[in-house]
Length: 185
Length: 268
Image 1 (cartoon, rainbow over the protein chains, first blue to last red):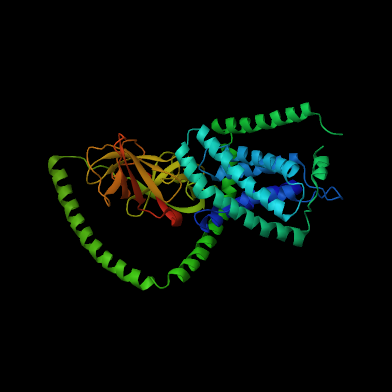
Image 2 (cartoon, each protein chain N blue to C red):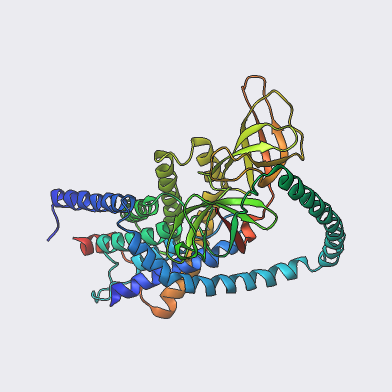
């Protein structure tokens, strides 16, 4: 049931991404609601754990595959680019939380969203380069024009979403890396 | 109990193999039914959501542009009058053309059928330039057909077709390449997208000089896009002594961001 609900959240995020979000870009960049939905679910409190530990990396990977699949279905880019990018971004975010940000607070979460969004787009662009869909000049121009702006946009929106989810649903808590590691082991 | 590094590595390999398998299955078309089912469910939802997004967008734009509406209205009225004159001239030419064709015993070239489709979704990637339309295989839409907007302006091509929807790659997408021709100087080139609203025309010979304001049209060389569809106007020309070709920045004739409906060319 919980998995179905998570899939539904990502699916509706994809619907809103392709209809609403794309209409309301700022300076040419639009927020990535699918990415934010995947991250929010990844940061949700594990309901089976009374201690309120964060979700496991395996669950994060499942959300990443779902988010990537929906992105690929609606995107005009080669299939698989978003699945790989989402999975790599979740792994990257996990490493950031484990190795770089020792304190789990809003600031570190926003930094994780910002760098995660950049990493996600970098992986997609790398995939496009490898598949021959784009050359280096186009990739450089896209990075400068869209990716950094999107990362800022995502971080700002994440602040609102995380605050809302945390305050009204009380579903996610910020824990130390040790708790996260214990959860995946 | 923690997992050993070896089992973690095998899990990672298994996960990566799973992703590669998904890509392979998609290449072979085994995921088509899954994608079709997903899009069948999502199309009605996207229709409703896209309509709501358009209304909110209109409201915002109307508030923003309220001052310019009267001025624009006057401009369009005068343009309308001019165009009426052009249309009546073209009707005369068509009549004359039909008569001469009849006299020479030439068969009339069948017109392409146009399928009107609504835009119900856009690429979820911030730099992706693809749209989803509400017409698909059951309406006779096929892959690799040209998509235009009112006024014979080229928009892109169909890249994927589902039962009740289809994906269109816009000219502005980074992987879009269209063989093109400048209308006055008759110079060939390749128009490429870079994710922004403007296009780049590359591989233009340096034989002649391009003029700013000149129109770029599809040359029909690739076979997907018919010849003569308007793409845009030359905005800036780049020519250097140490380069074999000149380049031009093309201002697209269509506003890709606010496309609400398009026409798909169905060849007879």
